[in-house]
Image (cartoon, rainbow, N blue to C red; front, top):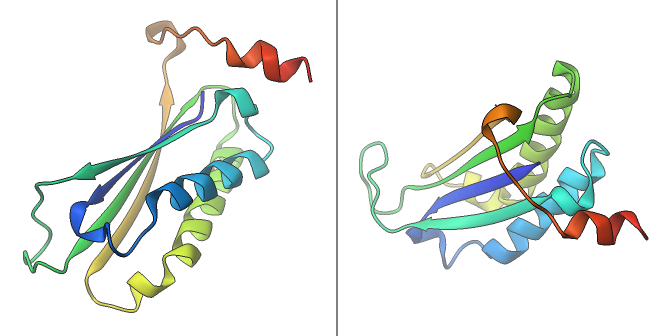
Length: 128
């Protein structure tokens, strides 16, 4: 159950290809070897309204919220977070060349007793 939600400020539309960023994050998640391909979800949500720091119009942000199921050791979660954050930081290097960009990532574990899901993709991918 690795689900990555990427929220971003609308002023990044011309600067970041979000489809490409989602693909990069999905690849990086899979490269950790901690998650099954059929479970990975990465999606981006554009924030139309926002106020960042000193409210300069060029200020932008990307906030990544990575929800995962329980069962991984702390060092595995840390390794996954570091890999994702490094890949995204490298990909967005040009944004860090300005004093107007903020990037964040948080990993949250999902309580299995309070999470319901049905996935027809798993059986197809597991049979390959």
